Amino acid sequence: MEVSKAEFIKSAVKPKDYPPETLPEVAFVGRSNVGKSSLINVIANRKALVRTSSTPGRTQLINFFDINGVLTLVDLPGYGYAKAPPELRKQWGPMIETYLAKRTNLRAVVLILDIRRIPSDGDLKMLGWLDTYGIPPLVVLTKCDKLSKLERARQTDLIAAAIKREKDQLFLFSALSRDGRDRIWQEIVRLTAAEME
Image 1 (cartoon, rainbow, N blue to C red):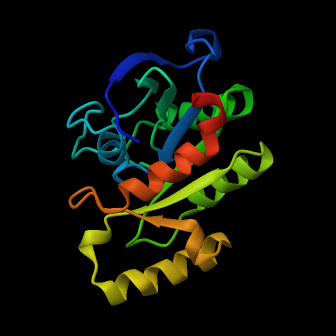
Image 2: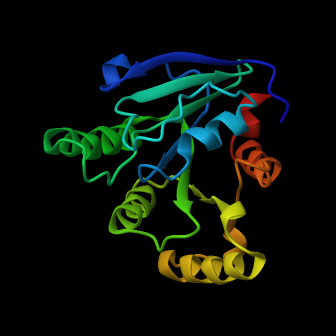
Image 3: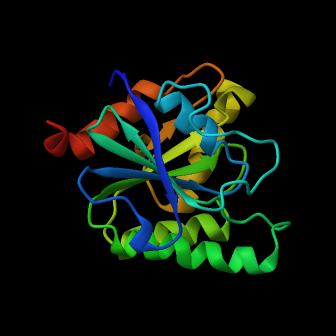
């Protein structure tokens, strides 16, 4: 998909503050420091639509972005960052689950995993939530440029087994080379195309 417009809409915590449910939404979620902001920026074809940071846990609100006036991308808070204040960590889970449970125009969730790491309990819990609410997960493995071809293949096998998915259901991505962007977009379009026409 060619992105001609990518704009920040608003941030929210509670459903009453979400934007109207007029466009299909695709949300992005993952552990802190997994490369979520970089992925969204590459997907949106913008260098700084989402602020990237070397400090994990920066995203503390639900952020909504308009893409071409036909689709909304949603940046959910990163989870699993141990150094975040405990009261903040307690808020993230309910905030994310409420969004997943109540957002009727949510069509898919891009679950982002670092290819170098075995999925955490938080990742497995997120997949469980998506299954519970009937939301299709699009599993993206980031930071693929940091591994050799052989290491990528081995890690993909391990991750697929850990999350009980077939290897061909995993999308490999590198923010550095932009490899994987087109395939991810194809899947997003497939899941939302009927509403974007």
